Image (cartoon, rainbow, N blue to C red; front, side, top):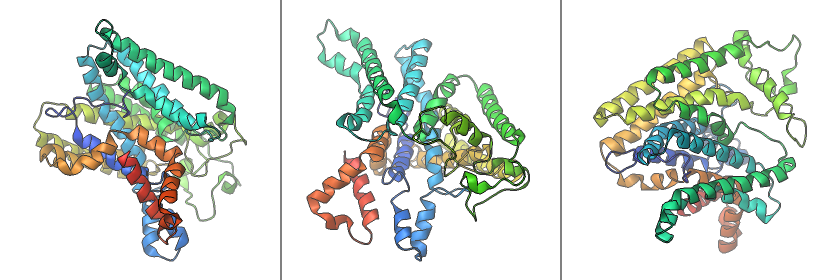
Length: 445
């Protein structure tokens, strides 16, 4: 496993990478890591200045929509999921060139899935000891290039054992972190499985199994997932008459659908009831009743469709076709997906990111396709690459950046505060300055 979720090792026919994909991943990370709860902490500025329309606009743009609709912040996770899918064909091709067998490839995909799930769970743990602080970084060492290091540093008689040493290292790290998680499972507190890492982990292997399986099989899988998930919600019974939605976190003024769209209301749907059952089987500090934003574990099912659409895109970009033709195909596919999402959002089910509705899958995937097409045009078609270096740096290290942003913000910010004094973040724009300082620090690291 590389420092990235997947390693598109031969994406660009000339440079060995699909730089536009690295750049798009970098943009996504640079939007996410300044403040994982909302962009560049604009939501804090809106709280400080509730009557300022500019801060209010930025806060709405860089936080999730209350329920249906779409903001820029809503697109961060689907972009990330989509790019995981795009990277898979490149990673698959690179490993096939190394003569990895299908069994080895599948085992590697399972390892990645387990690693992502473990990392997602570790980041839920409270930090009480130095071991708690170091555990996420220990898990990330499974991505170190042990095989290449062993080949360079080991005696000639042992250099050929690099692949076995690499496997033993990865398995050893996973075993050690697994034991750590088991010993600390009761301290996880309020477990949730809707965050990006568990969601990718649950769907990763299934999406991997569809790499190079043909467009017909992939399209069938996406269709079955979206239609089946839509039908499951539609057939699930609605709350009884007189039910008070406030008991599941729906506040006065929140969006509540009527008619058959009511099957996709916040916390009164199939996925919400599934979480009440599932999460209360796990150790919880308090019984799970509802998620405040309506996010659900079963989102991983339609999330797989987003990932598979990414796989299809990655295979399309690997075709031996003129790059301008490939770019045009991305644009057309993106526009059609957005149109399909809007039509589905009007006729079939609302566009809701929190429960990853089928209309959201189409709409958000269309946005991802257009964003990738724009960068593909600039970087791979026009060969304007120099400007993208800051993005590529972030795009090749997403797991490390996400982990540091999630668990280590206080230490980095405190280091700046102690070095330059408390005045740095004490001004009116302190939260934004803090976020900018933090993201620059992580990028430099």
